[in-house]
Image (cartoon, rainbow, N blue to C red; front, top):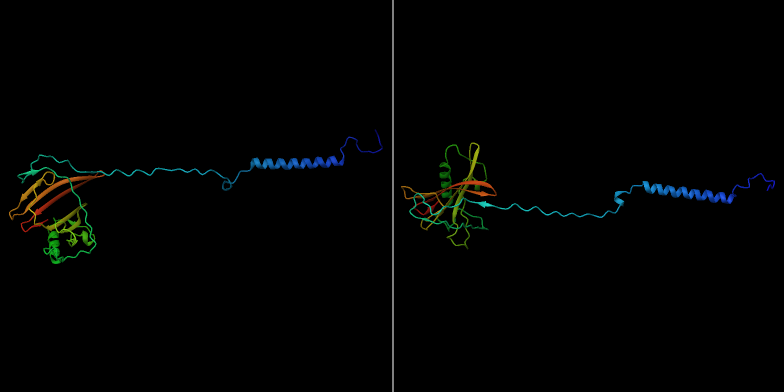
Length: 235
């Protein structure tokens, strides 16, 4: 019906237009938040992630092994009339809390001047071409004071030793010489303890022994000699 107004009768009223624009804005804003939420990557430090704990077993220590050559018995040893069966190996430890001194009244057979004379004689007996590796005094082939504990039985201990690393060309080896006084008889020949017993013209008896040992697969060769002198010295 024409009412003389030039406005279209089908056009929405201003109130409806305002509502439509408002709803459209709300929809655009909501859509913007939705898109932003889909595209937003959360920052790592703001994200709560369950902490995964891992435990690892400590590596097992390598198994210790110590091997020595087997001992044959019965056996014949040159220089021995009777050979006794092998005996179980024995070990000992010694602890001292006192600084040792050369002039020890418990061992009158040893003194500072005698240590000097013994060290000089030992150095002079080294084969030609053998040198002593540079090392502290206690590992320079100089006889050391006797370690002594007054509370201990004098039958235990009571020796002086001189040690050094010897060099010959590109090879090296360790030398250790122990000297003590003994009133005990010369020990019997025991299988596995010596290879030969020699009797020298001056009455000295020398037991020699070449052997080896392996510690964790590493083999060490050892050559030893024990001399029992007529004056009771054992070296």
